[in-house]
Image (cartoon, helix red, strand yellow):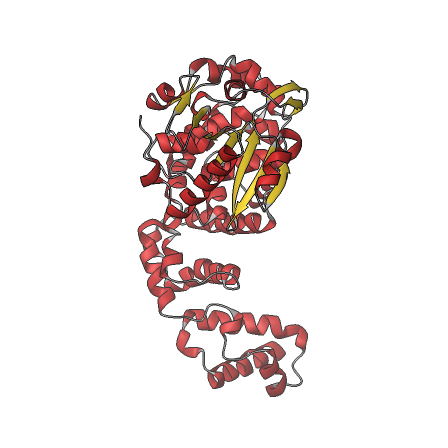
Length: 428
């Protein structure tokens, strides 16, 4: 599998990579592109990030480049910054004494590329590429596994997963994003090392879910997490209560990558029957998702539950669509999102063929919220000074309902007349 380095790597990245490579080599050090970037290049993909490995120690790397960040200096990793783009450089090392199921207690530098590659997780990630000579180093048959779309640990999978509890989750994520299969013994080891996997932080687990959402088949990640019974390790309340709903899970692959809240809502709705807002909020808070992602997810689940509860969707009235669906979307997103056809089209996994109707109504610019009314509280205070302010909410809700039913009523004078009628009835 030849690497088309010059055709796959963008010019600005290639210039940076060649600068780092030549600088280290001119100083007498070895230097290789390594890990996921090489795997992606072998698969004829443009890498998202680039990492180097070298026999230069961090202090030596820092002397050669102007801007270097100590991102993981105790473990031999620094980040070189060129034109505001980060490139990780890690010293050849041997990891020693994994005690916490996540990080080695200490590392040894001064080793070889071959020893360094042995410590990596999967064969497909243990490839190294010499930018200068074009040599591809494959000590563990990673090329063969990539060709066969197989995820396999380097060496004994139980030993490798016992060293780092994140590795089993990464295996599931790679199976999802790369559309690979996990090799039998490697997959078997996922079950046998759950006590180690359980030690990783909630943030790490959450991050792997979010990374899978960026791929073409996030549904596969959720399905694998359910099949391997991983969720209960981090959310104990989900023990024995989850299963895949095939009629829902496929929708996850249709959601745009930009709307994480919708991805989360569909993901958990597809594995938990009768998912409530309270349950979803509890799960997402447990998994340390951001407050904004949680709020978005709750909105989408509420919309989904409303939508599923409607038996004959063809009989939906314009009033219902505006009140139950468009208004909540506008209220929730108007301060941080341009709501237009492009945005509403992204709701297709929920509303299907009816999305077109939603878009059409939106583009007609119907008043949907109290802020859209032609009158406000100040107008009411001036016109009806004796009307108790404690009743303003009830009156404005009444006016909004009128306007949702008949947009032409949204004129100042008309609403004042309707307000007078409402006040008269209330006073009787």
